[in-house]
Amino acid sequence: MSDLDPIHASASELGQAFRSRSLSPVDAVDALLGRVAELEPKLRAFTEVFEADARLAAEGADRAIRSGHAVGPLHGVPVVLKDLIDLEGRVTMGGSAAHRARRAERTATIARRLIAQGMIVLGKTHTVEFAYGGWGTNQHLGTPWNPWDFETPRTPGGSSSGTGVAVAARMAPWGIGTDTGGSVRLPAAFCGLTGLKVTVGRVSTWGIVPLSTTLDTPGPLARTVEDTALLYEALSGPDPLDPTTRGIQPEAPWATFKRGVRGLRLGRMPAAERAGVASDMLEAYDAALDLLAGQGAEIVDVALPFRFSDCMALSQITNAEAYFVNGALAEDPAAPLGDAVRARILAGAAVSAQDYLGTLQRRATMKLQYAAALDGIDALLTPTTECAAVALSEVDEAHLPSRFTRFGNMLDLCALSLPDGYTASGLPLSLQIVCRGYDEAMALRIGQAYQGATDWHRRRPPIG
Image 1: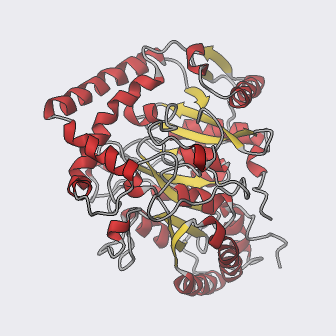
Image 2 (image 1 turned 180 degrees about the vertical axis):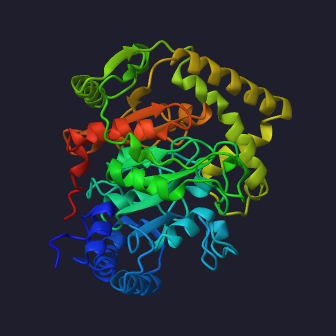
């Protein structure tokens, strides 16, 4: 028997324990479902828990592993999916009460890949309506409770709010979110997790409810960089059903994963970008750069041709594409849409074809400018957010927390978010590692070097 606690174990630890037969997938699923039953009434992370099916799948995985028929190292490991990801026969609401009865007629490519590797889907998790918001709020279906403060409801980060809460609260070892302007990295930041925003084309979006077809990217949320890399590898690769993945070969991040940062050139964000950032966030950021410098990285001051906030103007792409997908619903005053999300969708009605195409052209120019400014630099490091999770009563829906995340989507970069400290009251702080498009391995390498020298990611929310 194993002394490993399946509730607090990482996904990689669970996989190893299953392979050595020191722990059964049945026991792990039982423990996690018990955790869900205990905490879900308070945290509200799930839209649906697949209890019966998960138990059956765990029994099947246990038999396969014991008989020598495991399909891979992740066989039997549980996972949760954001409620944008289709599973045939299951409801996919996309966070909207208007779609309570929408049953999927297909299974998303990424869900098929996870299931084919023997992973067990515990359930679907809450999202901001149509993934269109960074705080994690949902006016009609409810907002998940950030587990780092059990007294005051705080933003969990969005739009992958339920996945962030489920993984942080140890109701699942890892899960899938999507990121169009920061929606993997923001819940990672506010919930003390590691989250990877991949480059468009790395991971198929087929079978995922769209927000912006130009910018949408699915990605992993986990508690360690190692687990993030494992799940990224499991998700990625070409998909004939998604043309954005055509010609993009799957990446195995392990060749460079443990090489450390000695000799790398890492960019420090411009001093002007420090304005408006909480002092504890900046202290954690500066300490992270000092630590990486101590490991042999060269920290380089970077002069960017624009401010991060300038990329917010490129939201016309998201607005126009969101209106194309959900404009008819937003125009219906009887439809149960949240006020903030409805306003964001309706903003797309004012984007003309000229505006839209002009914004795409401006984006292309900014991508070239950014590449020139970062020439010879391996990554740009920033805080992930301006501050730690705020109380829901203080949320301003007109001011989204994506100042440091959205530019990564708009410029088609990849980025890793991971904890780099805590506030005096115990709320997570977060570092963002931004790399060139299709250089996820570099972001993971830097993140692993940082987590190998720190223990911020090992802290647990104060909920037992």
